[in-house]
Length: 334
Image 1 (cartoon, rainbow, N blue to C red):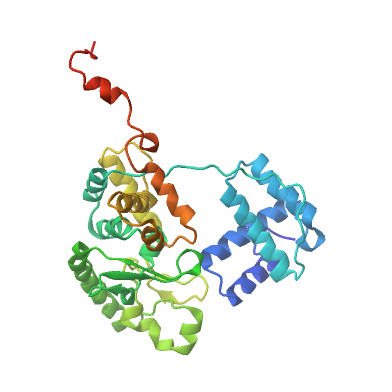
Image 2 (cartoon, rainbow, N blue to C red; image 1 turned 90 degrees about the horizontal axis):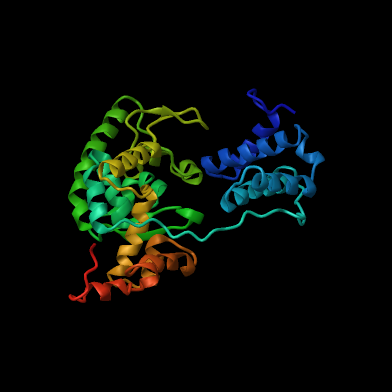
């Protein structure tokens, strides 16, 4: 079965089934890649000829030979579960003797408020605006750049996040200081949208059911992206020329450059701004359940990780050296 550069009929079938079931394009791309790697690992044998033992061998290989993270191994497993259940109609049973990737508890990188201010000051234009939303509202990267105009509520100072992680909706805060900058930004976006309409374009991607029920929603102002791409592109699924949202790599590169210019030596990224948002809220006395709701965590235990970085030093322990420094009669400097 061909899995090289030429198109594989089998993998095209996998894509078609995922699209019928409305899987996100990123999930589609990830699952197809894992299925392809599974097939190539077993010398291009057809998945219908394999089963639980071959799946176990592949998943073990990912940990032993590739040293992948637990989430990566889990995604590969989910892709294969989908393959056997939805494509081959042969749900897999218990998978024996998998070497599991060990999950490490990591304390998130959190910036001080001064560091956040320095970082944001190094961003410009739309990158400054998106960076402020990542920190000011605790958004994930993709939640930010997928925002639609209709999801901004300036009167209530809120943002509705649609289909966040796990397909859940939630409402988060909108900083008052961003109202005017966002409104000015939307004026320029509206001008570009009107120009697209005049040139025969202006349709934006909408959820499948909505596209069928309300075909004109795609050209309405409310459904346009708050942060559209600078140029139109071809939709890889439909072939329709549209203006998609901005590319996430653009913001990632801008934040990385800002971190360097701000002189921050810790490995900060877009997600670090979200971590900092949560930690600073807790430091200001916000209830952990409120922070959980703002972040969209299903389990409060996920939010509790931020309590580990609150306080002074490790676990909020004050070093006894501070007491020594307070004794005037003791000379500590050489």
